[in-house]
Amino acid sequence: MKRVVILVRRAPLAQSSTTEALRIALGMTLADHQVTVLYIDDGAGAAAELAPELAGGAPVAEALSLLGPCHVQELAEESSLKQARVRGVRSGVKIVDRAEALSVINGAELLISL
Image (cartoon, rainbow, N blue to C red):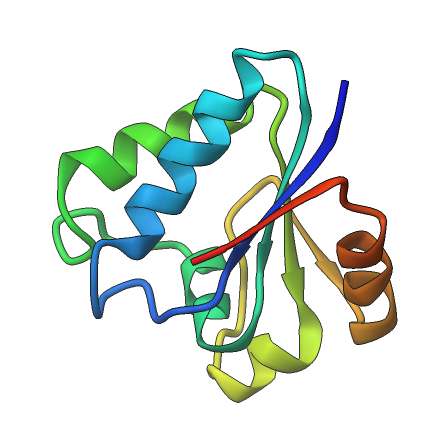
């Protein structure tokens, strides 16, 4: 089992990369990997409660609803949340400081950045 970290670095409403990152995360669980999604930089906005119709519609809503049942850990980097003006995160998203985020990145055996 590999430790896989998927970095979501782009604003969630700007393009489909957030949906693609979530799909990749879900797909990685099929190989029994330990998968973490880290919302960082402009991607921190994806940790907020999103209106799916504004963030790509059903695909992003479906992917978000499957992260928990597939045991995908979701983390949001605290200073990125502040910069993105995110006041609260979705249920299941853990807020971490920059040092912990870097530790998660450094501990990854496979790092995917979108």
